[in-house]
Length: 409
Image (cartoon, rainbow, N blue to C red):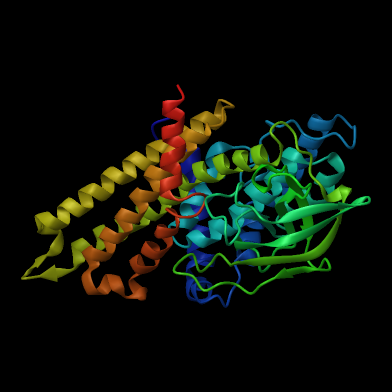
């Protein structure tokens, strides 16, 4: 794949038109936190029939995976892509992501965590009964999901430093601990919660368990949204669990590799998706910069005639082409039924995140004093783009995963 097809462009233009009508007029409310993003995302789903596509795909996949046998966990390699925008159509999955990230990347973070991580984990690891109970409402966006793994004292050491625990108590588990930087945490109806089995062994080596929790369970506290540097349209908060009792019906199947492997699969999904998010930011920053370079005049001529400005624009275009090619590669891999390895996903994220952040910062510089003002929008995109280098694993963690893969060959 070297370019978007005519069908892809029709989808892109339709989504772009919807965003211009529905999202851009609400940017100030999204940025201030006065407007949570979920109703907007639901309207996107209903406008393009994504909710019905997700519902049909869910029932077909459930019948295929379980063959009418309830209680059987899904195959470990089953993809959750069919539940995301596009129902398995790779381009339709990513085009809304790219287009929304041109305007409000936080919307994509909120949507992606609910669909790709929360619903995706349940679809990969849940029984048929668990999928019916929780996943369908998430896939149609009738409910909001959160994926809770990060803790205040663990950060990049997500597994070894994890302190949240599950203690067996008869037929139930008692959960305790805290999670931080949880996307959708303040508003989530359904939470996929990772913790360690409290079995008295070495804390760093204990088994990782995954539970599905519901808003309002006794002992579960969801904080108000944090104030953040960027991604203001994506609510982020903390979770506190104090003796939360969860039955075995809330425990997801461990599968091959246990809870750690489940989380790693989601890291791959999340990191590969950052390339599409970065492309949206790069495209919008380049568009705004070209328009400004054509119209802004200094010393009697437009600034686009100055070579230093031309150099900035040229570097932005190189970054756009490179990141677009990574997105095309990811689409082709999906069509071929192959998921990227953790190292490949890390490489995609590392390059794309750095490219988006650099392009956005250069856009601010090109705009000069105006670029530092919020009404010119590159200021917002620069703040949002920086998050790509931090969440889903910092740049430094991506380097580690790529290098380890190279050295293990």
